[in-house]
Each structure stands twice: as C-alpha cells, then as structure tokens.
Image 1 (tube, rainbow, N blue to C red):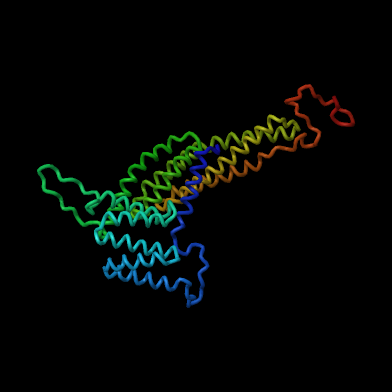
Image 2: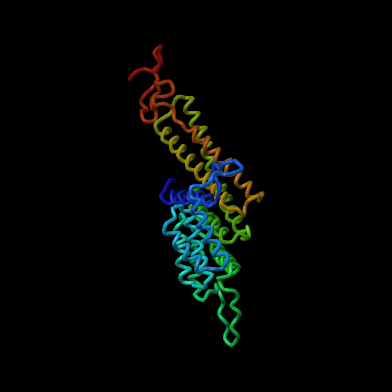
Length: 351
C-alpha cells in the first residue's frame, strides 16, 4: 500500500497539520509569567515598526511605504520584517496602485512557508488584484442596451477585500464538491486518503479566506471519507481476524510452515498500512473546523480511531514463531512432506 502517491498524500497532510498551527501565536511558547515582561532584544525594531504602522493608520501611505522600505533593509527579526512588508502591500492597495500592490503581496506571500495561513491569504490577495485591473473584483459586464451597473467599492476598501475573499473562496468551494464525489468511489483505503487529504487541506485554506464559510461542504467531505473508509476497512478487519485464528491453530499444532509465515508477515503489513490510513483519515478530519461539535462527525472520528486501534492490535498479534517451531524441533511439513514423526524417547526421528 505504501506507494508514491500514498506517501505524497501523507506528506501533504503532514504539511497541512504543521501549517494549521504555524501562524497561531503563542503555541507551545514558554512566555514569562511575571507581571512585567523583560525588555525584548528587538525592542528598537518593534518601536520602528510601531512608527510605520502609525503612519499607515494616519493614512500617510507614502511615509509608511518609505519608512517600511528603510526598515526592511536593516531589520533582523523575520516576523517584524513580514509585518513591515504587509504595510507596504496594504499601503499600495490603499493608494489604488493595483499592479505594484499585486507584486508586493506576492513578495509578502513568499515570506511565509507554503500552505500556512499567511501564504494562503496573500496568494489569494494577489490573485484578486491580478483579476481586478480596475480595482473591482468580479464585476459582471453590462447587458447590451442596459446601463453600466454600479461597480461598487474598489479594493482599497477593506470591506471590498473581505467580500472579494469570500467570493473567491465560494467559487473554489463549488469546484471541491466534485472531488468529494470521487472519494465515494475510492476502491482502497489508500485511494480514500489520496482523494480526501487534498480536499481537507484545500477546505482548511478556504476557511482562512472565508471564515463564515458554511460547514456543509466540510461535513460532506468528512462523511464521504469516513463512510467509505468503514466500507473498505470492516471486511479487511474480518478477514484478518479469520487469518489470525488459522495461524493460532497452526501454532498450537506445531505445524507452522514457511508459507504460513510469509502469509502472517503479509497480514502484519496490511494491518500496519490500514492503521496508518485510519490515522491519516482522522488527522484530515481534524483540519476541518466546520465539523467541530458535529455529532455525526465526532462519531465518524471515533469509529476510525477504534478501527485504527484494532488494526494496531492485529499487527502486534501477527508475529510468526521462531524458525524451527515453537519447541525448536519443528519441521516445515509443507515443504518437506516426506518427513514423519517416528516417535521414540528421543522425539521426532531422524531421516
């Protein structure tokens, strides 16, 4: 099951899980608990950034841009540098310099790791500006013979940006729906993960752009993946348990052949692969904030966790006995059918 495509899906999921918390401040920090915090080493740079932001807040965009560019040439703190770059991009947008603003947002995007909230947000901002040379996103053309519609607010307004982000995310969400139907047609657990993981990652990113996104599509994705995985996993678990009973019988009879040994190791590999698939499924589900507190989603996660634990237990049970039989004197009767137990005080006779 560990094919290149399956491993790619796992890598994508791992990156999304990291990105899910990469932009969140304070995660895992050991912040001091004293009432008066120590003076940070970059206090001077923080003061300079505050002056840049003050100029931006006062709508003095030219000053904000120039002081930010000077700051970027000398500052060392990457987080503060990213904030200064954001002020430059936002100031150019406020000045309605759409083309330069687009380039500034692309440069700002590249300050963040791919897949993180910052990367997703500023990539979307660049996409919106690229599609809006006149500063109006998604304006429908006027019908022939009708008056040109009111273009509405341009993208220098923050409300227009928020509306554009929501429209962009809604358009992309519609395209995701078709990919959810493909999850339902997956034939193996590997295919479920290969199809569900990119959908979960993209839906998480769409919620970054559109915090008010309805949860329906996220729930549909979780339901499709959870139910399809159960349909695939349950019969495999039943077959593995049946195999386990066969192996135990052979062990007790001291007739564990090389063929059975190979089959047991194969079953152990299948169990490990299925456990990893179930783990990836629940990790993907956890990316989707729209499923939080949804009873059916919680049940699907719980069922997947139970299946993973069962496969892990089976993998531990599928351990072949030592070569030569449990007593040390067993023979491979499957490959050596001419061997027979001749009895006697010394045990099995010698050929």
